[in-house]
Image (cartoon, rainbow, N blue to C red; front, side, top):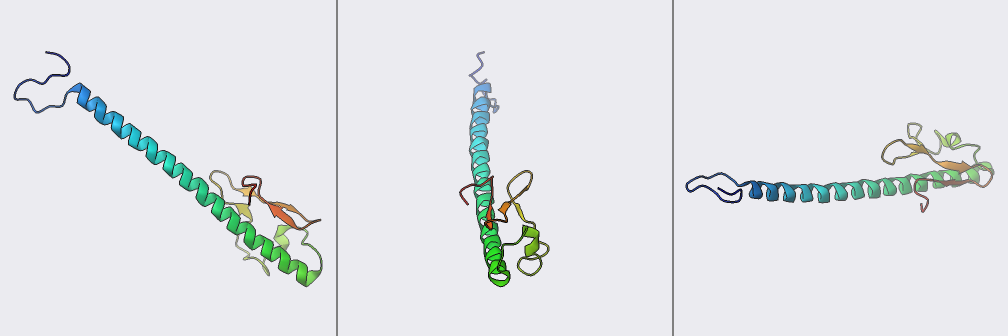
Length: 115
């Protein structure tokens, strides 16, 4: 009896059929993981962009009221930004601090440089 043939009357799968099923499942898992990874990366970028927008608005309000740039991002709490908020990029893995230049009032993220 060869590997690809069934015995008459048996309802079992052949080795070839099982290998094809595992191959198809593997391909579907690969596609799902790639899609999941892309979704996580994009949501991280959107969250970072929104955080930077809020921080920039708070820096602007601070400058308008005080006439100077804040010395650090922590100076924005609690009057301009929620005191419980973390001033970090919410990217996957370790959260990273935003870069802030007190001389110019510019805030940026090295993980998402386009934001």
